[in-house]
Length: 130
Image 1 (spheres, one colour):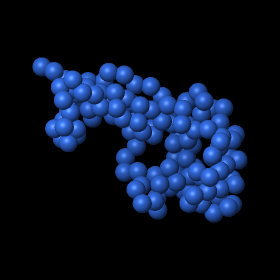
Image 2 (cartoon, one colour):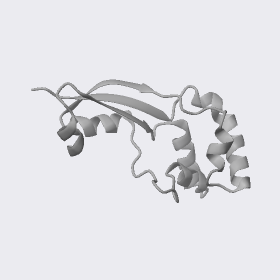
Image 3 (cartoon, helix red, strand yellow):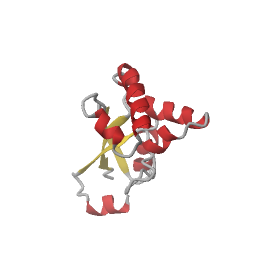
Image 4 (spheres, helix red, strand yellow):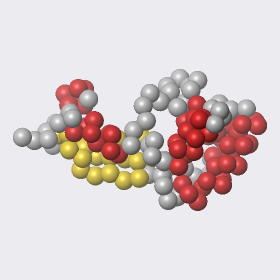
């Protein structure tokens, strides 16, 4: 936050695009994790990747973070980032064939729900001017 404030002009904006912990995938993976099936949750956090997720935000807690650092929310919107095209390649990059197959089938079943409740959002913030 310090770096953003330091480098952003008074008329500049910060646009953040990130996955959310309010989405269907996150909530489903979390439920599976609680039931002892950890692979989906670990994949969401990108466990074992070179740059894993450190935090998951939602619009409410991200806005609070920015407001506590003298920013104002200007605009936010869910983002449709999940498509069937390319899904297999995206899932299989760090998974075994069996895990990829089950995940791919599960994602196809969830696809209609994900069109209504996105697992990704964007938010636009500007500095508060006093």
